[in-house]
Image (cartoon, rainbow, N blue to C red; front, side, top):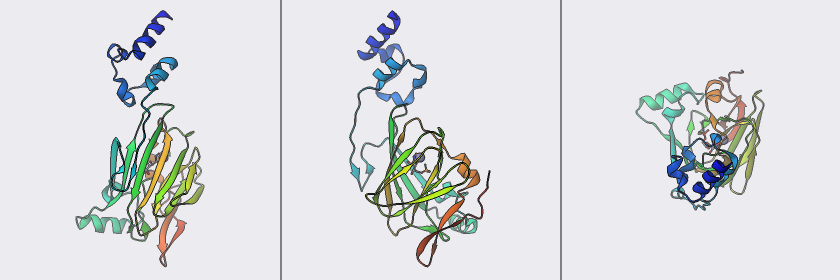
Amino acid sequence: MILLLFTVVIVSLNIGEYLIGVNLKNVDTINLSSIPGRQRCLMLAGEPYSLILSEADGISSYKVKVERRLSNLREYFSNKRSVEEILSKGEDPLIYTVYEIPRGAEGELDVGYTIIYPGKIGKEYYFTKGHFHAKDFTSEVYIGMRGEGKILMQDRRGETKVLEIKPNVLVYIPPGFAHRSINTGNSELVFLAIYPSDAGHDYDTIRKTGFAKIVIEKDGKPILVDNPNYVRL
Ligand code: PAN
Ligand code: ZN
């Protein structure tokens, strides 16, 4: 008890970071699960932030920027011949960019700002890889900022739901649903994502199975059709 009190005091005095060997300003790099609750709360306290949503740079003060090109999505698009044709010409179009502010600890929220560029591979609109959260019982909120598209959601039994995303629309993704965003418009689809920092991302399942449905263009309009390559588990 005395030892715990001592630790709490030194942590709050900020000397603790030297004694326990972590940088408290960078809590997202340490494993907090091994640290007792009271002390963990003290470590997480503070550091509120605000950010600016900017058309030029995604979000101000982002920590991570992820770019996904066609070569990173080779296995994902259904028209494999189109994929290989484009790549063999030495082209590797940018499909989407994500700006992220990860916090990395239970109890916090991560923020991501995704830009999906307009385009198609064959008849299939550009999309994100899509994933389940590694912690199945975590949910997520998407808020449309610019452009128009769809959010495809799929549970572990392969049941799918599709919702529209556009400015002023909030999409709620409940626990247990894999999610992929699809840009069905002629301009960038931009949305904000907010999710528990400890949710984690399971990309492997969707990479292996795909989604049961895909969104393709027919007569200038997006339609939802069965994915011929879907692997039911
Ligand atoms: C989003 C996604 C982002 C990119 O922030 O991570 O739109 O999609 P992929 O992660 O599927 O490549 C989110 O859902 N985070 O949990
Ligand atoms: Zn997610």
